[in-house]
Image (cartoon, rainbow, N blue to C red; front, side, top):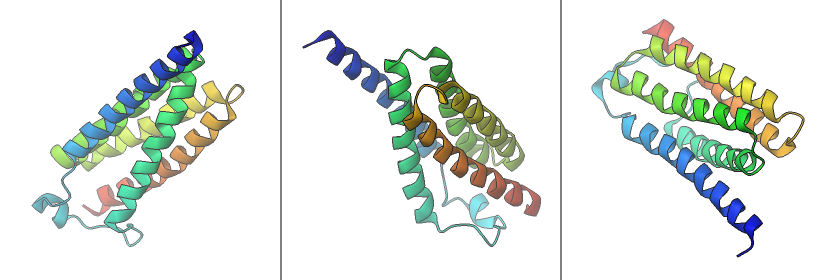
Amino acid sequence: MKDNAKKQIGAALWAILAVGLSALMSFLFTDTDSIWYASLSMPAFMPPPWVFTVVWIVAYILLATALWRQIKNKNCEAVWGFVVILTLCALWNYAFFVLHNSLAALVILILCVIATVYTIRQTWKTDTLSTVALLLFLGWITFATVLNYFIYMAN
């Protein structure tokens, strides 16, 4: 196997591992069947539950693809940005569903928005595909932040 192909596969495996770990932790922390969650007042613009599943699957695929491209291009600043984003994604689920703390979850989402903007700045001039993936993720995470804010205010 050529050296370049090995590097591509290695970068892909690291990206899949990092994103997969974040997704797994998020999944394990999420409990939409809890009495606490059922008791929350939700905003009128709250999407149906299946939307979250679909959007997060797409978001994780986009993040894995963009992270893979940054690993193979040795863009360390962007890679660290992804590490922060993925960590915050898992922490949000922990704060919201395990700790039942929508304020802490809101703060985590705001930090995630900041980390995403930082990471976009690291990919902006060098990788259009990663930047587009991150901009799409930024749109989703911004919506999630607004949603979390309204949940916090109503409860």
